[in-house]
Image 1 (spheres, rainbow, N blue to C red):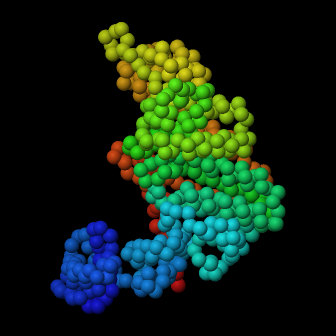
Image 2: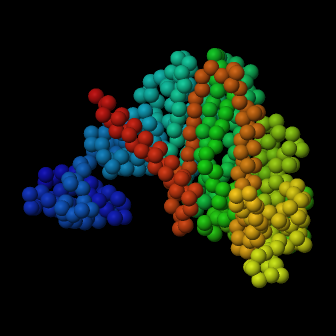
Image 3: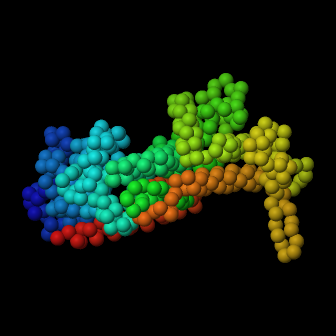
Length: 487
């Protein structure tokens, strides 16, 4: 075993390469020499394989990927294990090659930069019609399974999985754009350009309502999205359909960290400075005014993003127009969203009684704007927020609520309104771009939220992480199955 090139566990770097100098106790104690990245620091370290934190044996190294070149398909590695995968991906990341194959699975390492030429039209053209993946480097738009689906009129599914911030949402957008481009060039026709425009515009629209800034990701998907791209008998894109799962409703009323934000659309509304919603009126510092809303306490420094939010508001309105939503319906949708912000400003006061019950402050501007924008009767709303109804046999009781209970009732209403508005938006998108009658085959894309752990994890987060773990289990199963099938 002396002289073997191995990896040993490391608390900081996970795995570090080294050379075995000596073994003792029947190979259970190993002296390993580590040469650090600067090639000048040498560290000799004893490793006891009997320690519970150590593997049963030290994994062997492959040829140094930075010296001998990384591999396109990790199934071709001589030694396939965790450190070999990590070092191969690291080498490709440093070479600005974010994509690597593992059998039929494409592994993407987020470069956190838009690499010039990697997603250009000319690069897309190179991958058009290529069945042999060995002729081109790994890429997310590798299309040989898609072409097979076209030719056999079968259907395929593409699962995009990974932790939060891994780049899943951007990957799905790249795939959708490439598939749409393929559709317009498959038969040399461009008759479906209007459909393609609607399908592609639906992505940023749903992002505005379903994505938010988190600690790890400025555009994190806070819902699961299953997109069905619909093709006709000539392999032309004729429509698309979307299903959504597990929208993070709790984000509407609270954010878990001061540096996180609510959904993008709320900041776009504030930045629009439209007097219709009374969100920025008579404020000396408009760029900071969003933080005065109880539901927008995250990301307190808003001045840097204010102009960008205003630009994105314009893009959101254009996208709503593209999918065919009438102006009056757009205003009704945005009125309800602005109403949610004013709901968060509604306050309560104790009643003139000793039972701890509460009344809504019906004299505030927030109350007036809430009722106006949501189209609610003030007295009916006050009764609903400050009381709960209990049914017992044939009798119905009205139980007054305390101030804390009324506030929870208010927040629950805000979350439910937003969830229904989001469902309505998805329905409008589907009605605009779906075409079930003309569909012969379809390609399905699943963009699921990444695994996350917060200081306070609610039931919603449990469901999100559970779904993510199940998908990761499928991914792991498919990887092992692929490795077993390699001759």
